[in-house]
Structures are given as C-alpha cells and as structure tokens.
Picture 1 (tube, rainbow, N blue to C red):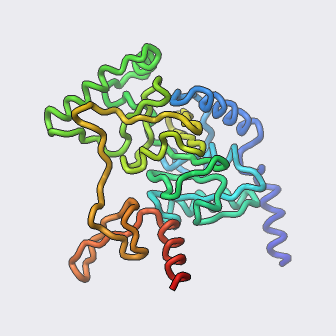
Picture 2 (tube, rainbow, N blue to C red):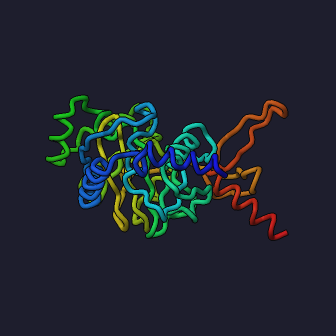
Picture 3 (cartoon, helix red, strand yellow):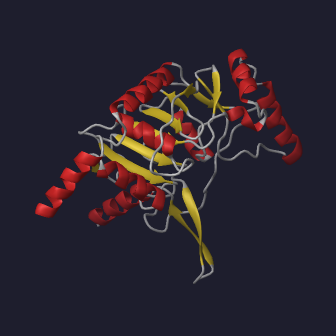
Length: 292
C-alpha cells in the first residue's frame, strides 16, 4: 500500500494531468472546436512531442489527452483489437498520468481512440470517437504540393479526384481504393476518413456521436460532427460498395453481420473468420453463454 501511494505521488509530481501542459491542451481544444464548426476542413495545429514515434498515433493521442477528464472512461483499439501493442501502450500512457477507468466495451466508453476501425456498436450522442490518421489530405493521391491542395479545397475543385476514380474503372473495371476512401462531408469538403475499411465508412453518415481525426505528423485536425452528411464518392453506374462476408461466420461468437478478419489455420489448413472488433466479439460471447 505504501509503495502504491509513493508511485501515485511520483506520477503526480512528474506529469501534468493527461501528460500535456494546460496551454497545449487549450490550443488543441480550440483547433478542435474550429474543426467541429467546419466539418471536413483540415485545421492546422501545433503538434506536440510525445513519448511515442510520430506515425504511431500522436495526432489521435493528443486529441484524447486534451479532451479526457476525470469522469471519462477510455477505450483504445488498434485495427479492432483491444490488446495489440499500439492499443496497450497508448492506454498505459493515458492511465499512468490520469485516474480514469478503461474498458474493452465500447458501450461503456465516453472516449474511444482507434486506429483503422470503428466499433461495431453505433456511437451514442454522449460519445467521442478519436481516429489516428497517418495522411489527412485526400487529394495527395492526385496532387503532391500542399499549396495546390489548399487551393483546390478553397475552390471546391475536385475534378482531379473524380478523374482518379474514372481511371480506376477504365483500368480495372471498378474503383480499387480500399481504405482512405474519399468522401464528401456536408456537401462541401472531400475528406480522408483515415485507413478504415469501406465497411466502416457508412457509419459516419448522420451518426449520433462526434468523430475527431488527428494527424500528428501532418499537424492537422478535422471532424465529422453529429448528424452530418458523409457521402462516399461514386458514379451512378458504379456505386460505392463495401466489403462483403456473405456466407462467413465468426467462429467465436457466431456473428454474421460484422467485419470479419480472415485467418489461415495452419493446423487444419482451413480459412476461418473472427470478428475484427474483439470487444464486441467478447461481449457477444458472454451474452451467448449467459443465455444458455
């Protein structure tokens, strides 16, 4: 007990609450408010140094650290997993310099930080989902210069992006973009939804919760507020399509309507499927067990 009290005292003396200093958190919150006020617009911010490498979630982590409060409950996932190295490390950093609780159940969390996936359970109006973004600029596929992408956004000139999609169809017979699928927000800005699968993209449209996107290396914050239109770019004769898992079932919980990971079983030589969202899968397994 004495050792635990000593460790807590050391933490309180070493770190400011939620690691970042109060001035940094206020600056990030101001940028976040602007991003919420202009859906899809990339707001520059002064990205801080953190004890993790840039490109490993510093943008999302800075958003989480600037928003987290003493009464919040945090969930961190990486590609759907609660126990990956990235998720565990971020969760440990946040809990080491705050006194908040953590959970694997997205329904219990008030703040969810994620990389590459959106939880299966839809967000409520009292929840915030923070996405880690490696490359926030959707026009980088067609324009390498930052000053030119800013001009194209200002003029709402997205013809080059439409041409990029058309070239895909001519060459491959379909749009081949998987993750980072470009979408129109609030009928104004094309934005990058981060490397989430297309399966998750439709969850952003008219959602109840607040979606925040942080790119630490690129120093950008943008947002999709609640009840905002998010429409994937598509042609009338080549509509947007999501990944399909028809005929496949999660071997752990029996789910047939979730995003599934394809796993090769070396012992049996067969391909099996499991829910990508491990928190959802565990909760469903528990519900099935309790119902027996």
